[in-house]
Image 1 (tube, one colour):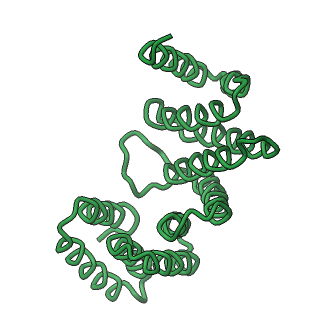
Image 2 (cartoon, rainbow, N blue to C red):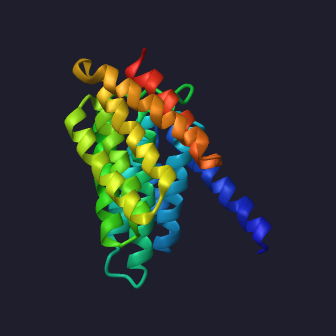
Length: 238
């Protein structure tokens, strides 16, 4: 079989799995992924199935269920020679799904409910723990803490949000990641702006950070600035 034929086959398998999810046969879809004799391939399939359940079906609840099953599956294979790769796939699946449980992206057709935020926080915590266990470096650790802070922000848990974002800033600073550091500072400013007592100070801080991101002259900095503006509009408001 050629690589192109293999890609088509994988695409057909994904389409079949998505059709099962859409028709309400989620347990069958999950069982089908687990049936793959290669656990690494199965864990990768869970990542893609969860991603496309969000993107194509816009079904957050099913995405979470797939992520829960997929991370449990990957971590249950710890005795194999591929334990590290399986943990990395579990980390990716947990992080991606938790990020998609955050309403601040403003993705069209997506409804984030309280139970999705709670599930996202649980998966974000798992992602952080695996990031630390796998020793993936300052930037990865910073981003893991950022996501926890962002989810706490969306839940209105401002003290927890700021505490997680402080840890994110420390990791980004240690890694020399200036754009990410400004981004984390921006989310801390949003947490301040969301509270009546610190609203003005938070707004001023956010404006300062957006100007600094604009002066960075990088695509990543511009992405972070746009992300902060959207999150401000959705989560905080004028």
